[in-house]
Image (spheres, one colour):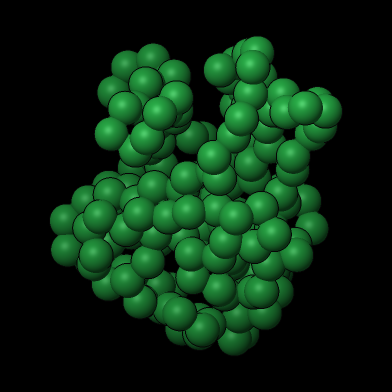
Length: 173
């Protein structure tokens, strides 16, 4: 089963001036669902399902339909920072999480703003599974050179399974 997904996104794009673009989600409001933030992220919640939360833990947006939520375990009620060491962010306090759909499997997408690059660029992010009890988190990475109907898969196979420790994933696109 697919449950929480935790991600830090970073990529380098070649514009008129080459610059790094990075987002660790610290500047996003805690518990904001599908937060575009200063980067301008887009989201697709194709399953449209309510999501699972944590028993005995409260936070804004818990159990709502979503693709992703800016999760801050230090601001849950009660705080999860000492009771759940597996939910600590890779850096800072916040991370992007995707909670398991109540009805069927997740079909949730994080989409970067349109990039205008003339040469290959490196795309990297940190990801982990919260726990392996229900199966490891699965993801795929795609890109498009035209529009949302022209996806090219970058990851090999059907999907990547993220281990329960933060792991860096890097791709050249």
